[in-house]
Amino acid sequence: MSGAPKLSLAPLDTLPAAAATRRGGDSRVPAHVAIIMDGNRRWAEARGLPVPLGHKAGAEAVRRTIEGCVEQGVSWLTLFAFSSENWLRPAEEVRALTGLLRLYLRSEVATLAKEGIRLRVIGDRSRFGAETVREIERAESQTAHGTRLNLTVALSYGGRAEIVAAARAVAEAAKAGTLDPACLDEGLFGERLFTAGMPDPDLIIRTSGEQRLSNFLLWQAAYAEFVFQEVLWPDYDAEALADAIRDYGRRERRYGARTG
Image 1 (cartoon, one colour):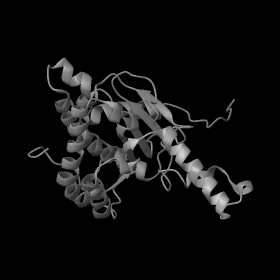
Image 2: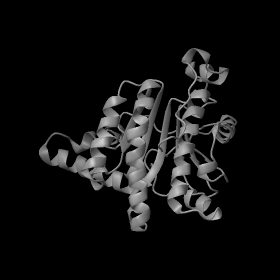
Image 3: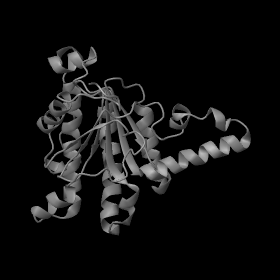
């Protein structure tokens, strides 16, 4: 990513009306958008390029999407960047992905901090090397005071594994006598998920035309709205995001209740 354009965000007091309205509580704009970023490989193959260049182009789409979220007034953005199943991909591709991750963390963290964007990483970070874990921790610490946008990146993440880990934590607490199983509810269980302290996603987007969750935020997606878009992730931009948000804004969220 060296030499690539940096984030370019407008000052808070010059944000467009959509952002100002959302900060005032407009339900037509989701507070939390989660995106399954799909299509890097197909984008590269369609152009006769090595797969790692598709992932690099996908990183540029991340910048555009962050800018679009700020413009739209979205407060939380969660990106599915690397699943627990991705470790099964060819070793060369995994090395390229993890190398790109380290490069991104080193080159972008100062900009994220300057622009008021807080970065969190969820998933099993222990599977990455010590160097990558240190870079993640440094990035989280350096951006901890950001309030403009909460950016969460899911790395080595799997929804089923997350739920199993939370169940294990509940069982250990019950065994230790620090949790009465009779008192366990959804809130207490949620406190043991990777996403503890985060709101559930209002809108989940998947790019590249695929229509499945792929083990992403299984617990948290219970009442999310879904938008599936044909665009491949490296081509994603603020207008594609705006299209998804407009689709979301036309829907009536019912949370299981009947309204007539």
